Length: 253
Image 1: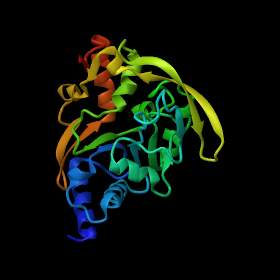
Image 2: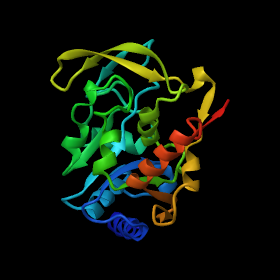
Image 3: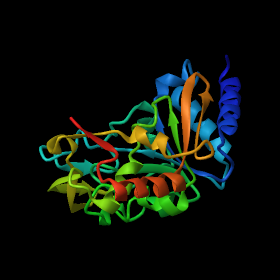
Image 4: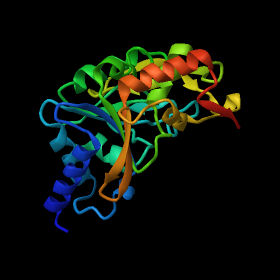
């Protein structure tokens, strides 16, 4: 099938799932799950941007926690790759894409709200603090789209957890060297997540028990089984669950 026909089909599927022009969305993804894709990652990104339109905003996590750590505490906002898949890595390097400044939990974005959502992340001393795009999406975001990966890899839940700061969440701080867009450098001291060290694993898929059909929708986009989660509902229900039980979204390893 030709690339244009695939794009039209993907746009139709995204709209059927519930994404609208002007929305602000964060995407977790498995590129492979979409099936054979003429044009590869660019076809997927172009389809998402077409549905969102000029007033919309598209974000992908650009996480680098696997390669930037206490043993290698250097993050180059221009060159450090992300570790969460081919689609977000392509999006990060696409001309015009912005990236927040954070050694382990940066976010890439394009669109009307991108600059506002991504600015000042370097002011945080945790991964998903008050200046992070994940926290700012609480007020400015519409949906988290999960393309073929289930709802478990939901980084935004860390931002919800940071409101409560449960005992499993953080470990010792690390001093990072940050290389900025212009080549200049700065230092950041950031507390890393400590799930393994604390003996707990994430079970963010439990969010499905807390949301109704209007807040969590399922459907296919091309060959990928996808989920669309309301960001305001995730925050409301997730925070309420954690205040009742700080261990609701984890299990002992």
